[in-house]
Length: 92
Image (tube, rainbow, N blue to C red):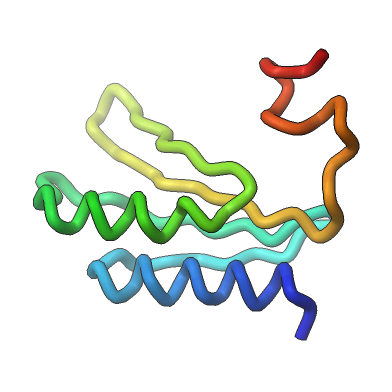
């Protein structure tokens, strides 16, 4: 199993341990993890979520006006070029 897949599976397992139902999807350049975040989520659970996604290359939270919240994280299959480190908003 590729290292990126192993990292993504480990992140998904840690999110599941916090109580989130996760989805893992293989893409061309990365492995993506998504989880619906219930309302409310305890402070201890948020801490576990943040510790889990800290191992991802990128992560974020998509919140909608209907109070749906989707946590996402990606693990790149290859190391990004220097100009892409930090994402599109941080390019040099």
